[in-house]
Image 1 (spheres, rainbow, N blue to C red):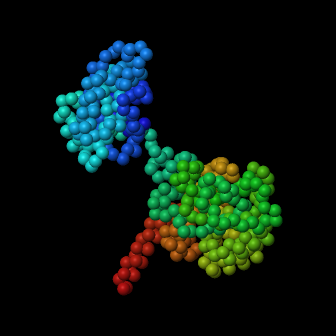
Image 2 (image 1 turned 120 degrees about the horizontal axis):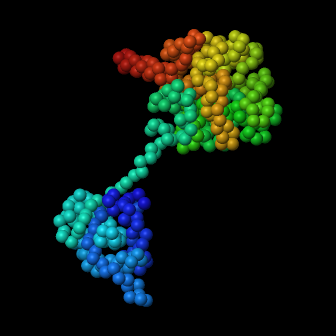
Length: 429
């Protein structure tokens, strides 16, 4: 019961409210907090006799607890209701205070204050006050007012990247991302509404969602739904993913998966033909002329690729000029790769599960999410080169000389540039 009487009467009300019987003169109405009219609490002195009713009878105002409602208090409550045009919705006698407590509803637009003031002047009434509402003092959100996702506090990467502040400016809305990986468990509750399409390019697609560990983990890092009271928060929780299954899991309960030239070429060609602007490839392997040709053709058409940094320098895909490389802070492989947290990062597992993941694959997925925020903030009007320049100009330098990205600095720089552009445009016209 959320709407209760004055705090001093609270325990007494709870003790007395359950003692009313169907034999009461006025059946109690609901005292829910969702009443459509304002209510007031009024008490009357109740000098009720303490003896039980005659054997074999049930008094009209017997409460079942041995404490009776006196005739005087009963009549006074009725007369007050009539005089002040109030509707009685609940009542009960409170033994320890020797009073009869009545809840009245104000059926018109009079203010509670004016009604209480009038009632307080009536000599028949011992107390008149507004119906008060009391609340528990638990924090309604498990996080500081931003997310209600219960595992958010374990996402140390989001804190390190400043994602909560970044989400005040952009959350990836309107950005489509191609995820070239294993399949994804599209039924995961933290991906509901985030997977726009799936296509498989492997000979034998996985028979169970449990074979989609790596892809599901990457999808969660990028776009897990925020504020759904489930699990975690993605870096770009409003982005939409298109899943291109080109890799297959090598062993059960393992993130290790493999792709080949043929499956990757088919997936890349499909993503390019679909016009997906941002493509995540949390994979690495040897230089491959066919795949490089497909990536280069897509870059010329404006596609933005993010890959997992690897050695040697010509490794696919980050060895291709124009592909944005990501790496973790614990394993800086290349000076030209952007650094993001990539160790012990919480993400999704198939079958509605969650677990921690580490590695350069994680870094690539996180960087893809960050770029989705930038694209969303700019309405998609950024090229791969301008994104790389923006991230590099606003980054901090790690101890190993690599660029540690600053999401909020990049968003602020982008916002400033857009503002200056709007001002210049107005001056021109």
